[in-house]
Length: 229
Image (cartoon, rainbow, N blue to C red; front, side, top):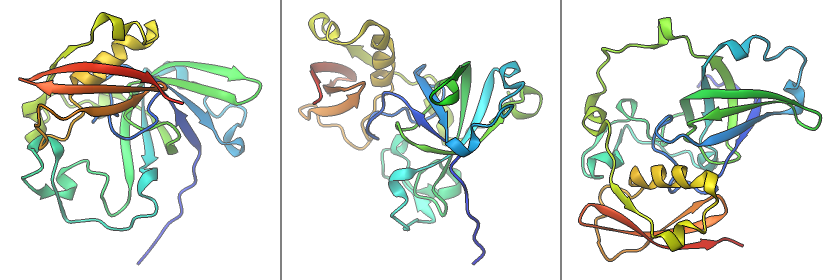
């Protein structure tokens, strides 16, 4: 079998310390992430003219799966309740022949730092903090945008959002600049679709906090927010 070696050019850092709760797709939640290049790629001119583009493609690796080699020709997308199987190439499941992800993010700003070289700040990433990035490419609307494209089974979930209730006394535990992102994350309903136990308490890590919630009658209610050690 022919194989190639990919080099990690950068890592992304954000408030997502665990897989559970990370947005299911890029652009759904307007969180800010920082991309730091590896020392080998902190070269003068490497991002020249990148500021002229509003969006970027990130090619990255499902790092938590690097030690696992199993993949299946069919998978069970969470949005379909975990019961219906589709072909792996008709999904964005991480359990693929090659554990590679592709995300479109918005470029917020570029900063030059003395310690880390050029740093990119992007909005809308759907990956855990520390995820390796293999390549960065500019998004070109004249070629990459297809307004009439069909989204398959995912079309039925466009605009999907659940009601989120965060009691004021709990919301005050969350830094002001992270409250809306937390609300948007929860609004996407991070639970697997096949789990619908109104008595179950779920825990999600975000920005150094453990957020516990329940889902009853189609509404999500936060019941506790604790700082993680």
